[in-house]
Length: 306
Image 1: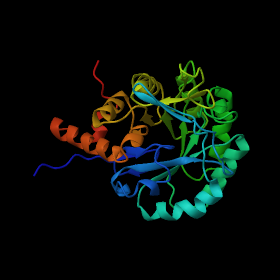
Image 2: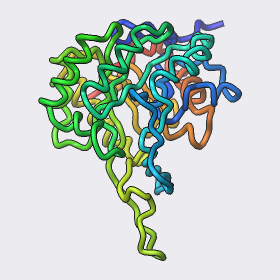
Image 3: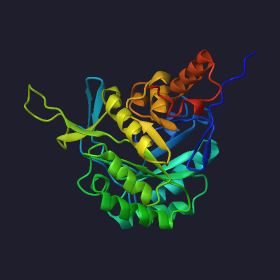
Image 4: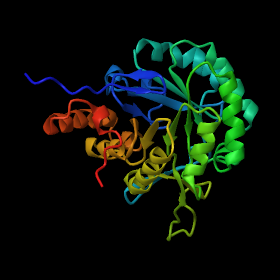
């Protein structure tokens, strides 16, 4: 029997059994998906954005399907860091799955508070700083669209964090490499590229916006070509590893991101259509490597031919 391809990768000092991670905001706290998928099989889970205090989220309607994508304005609804540690982490620790905690704040102090509390919690492999959410009135994307703000926040959190810091960048900028460089120079260990794109939709029958907050984040296959380009630009310019996300629904999609330079990928919007999407991506990736006779997924990283 032919030897199976090696799917393991190392991301910012974290060893992953494979490079397929469930994206934050699309996979709950893992427990909601445990009846559909063996969480040990995928590379990791990035849990819902976690804030210093509970957030109820935005008023409905806050989801709307678009051509090849989806608009969402959930507003980072979450239980807050204290309840996350108390009520959610016990289950996650039992899964033997790598847990990335997506951290969100309205101020720099909020981010620091959440990270300091998480430092005392066992079972977490890294923090993913969400500086890029377009669906809140303050915080979030404000930090991710200004290099100085990005640098200051990342530096403050890095000084307090006892685990690797992954910075989730916003695509809603003129030059994403500039923001990526600011994050790297301030101590980021890796980058997630990228969050959703600011968009909107209007109901022509009622003349009203489809989303209560009017604008929302666009995700899904429609954004993949743009985000893929951003991953390529960043990995060419910088040295820290990148997690690619945006429109990944198949193993072939993941392969494109690896060829562009990503070290790992996150599966997001596809989870709404199929809760087993990360596992399908993983198995198709393995089949691709076997078919091509490629011994390791690491052999794909940054190997686009020109």
